[in-house]
Image 1 (cartoon, one colour):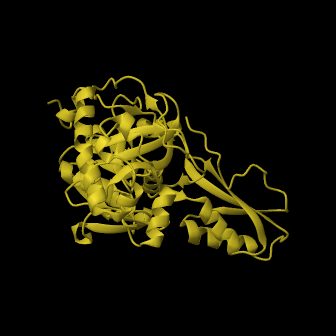
Image 2 (cartoon, rainbow, N blue to C red; image 1 turned 90 degrees about the vertical axis):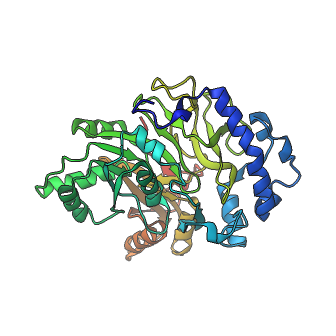
Image 3 (cartoon, one colour; image 1 turned 30 degrees about the horizontal axis):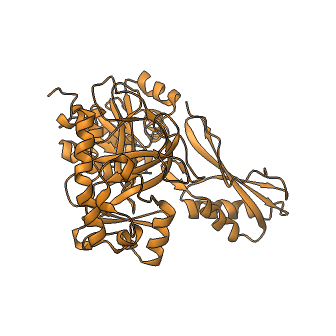
Length: 412
């Protein structure tokens, strides 16, 4: 086995992989229906015993994020989707929404080790992990994968940039995991302070788009940056390889691309919504609609891995938008409006300033000041956990295009 190969599964014939996945699927479906009242209700009336390939899988209903959220609110915390005792979960998380997620048992429950290996990480590497460890599973997803790979993790989390710059100089980590732009923040801060920041030579980023200009800036500093596509619900679904041609789907997932708003698979190469089935027996997710847009890249990767490839994240099927690794939902903008009676309508614009995500909340109001911008900025931060600017416009001043969140970033 070559050093670039995590295991033999990566090079198996695609037809064999497909047979193996669908041979395992009936047991997962039976287990979910027998042990989860929510799955029993969701799949009621469907012949799960007939599911044996992609065409029959497509006959099952998709489960959308808002449906999961509604069920969790009606039957907290997991909406009846937990297919085992809570005592089997290693940890429980509360992501924004709130959405509750259990951590399945095992050393690498989110399948992160494979993506780290593809990014060049090896046993013995010291990794600065700048994903959040607070409330959400973000920090733990690649933390667990790194430990499974034999790496040492510095659980940095987010914020405290001065402290992290000091840690890089003292600990000299060889790698970084976190959002694409936060590595730049840490490195720039360290250099401003006159620190030596040259130890980091590889990075695996997620939670946002890696813009070409930012990747080039990292490469000019001798840092090889790869991306992975992960969700709190499912783990690492796909990852970039040294070929830099799309993202290879991780083993142990069945990935479909469907027409947004439906469960109907689209033709290969057509952009649609990413739907994923994962083999987590404690918290099965079957035809789970992520809300993210992507497409299948035809052919196999030049790196030698044989699984299907995705074009990466291509936007949202709805207006739910990821900013600095955090999702913002139109419902949150409605929450801000309802907290301020002076505001008639609001629109959040997401843009890029330099190599950083930026937000501007524009609101229609008769008010011309009176401290409203500061109060709105405080509410925006409280609701979304992110800072943003506020702009007041007169009634009728916002575009009449139905957009509550407008993503103005350009994706190369």
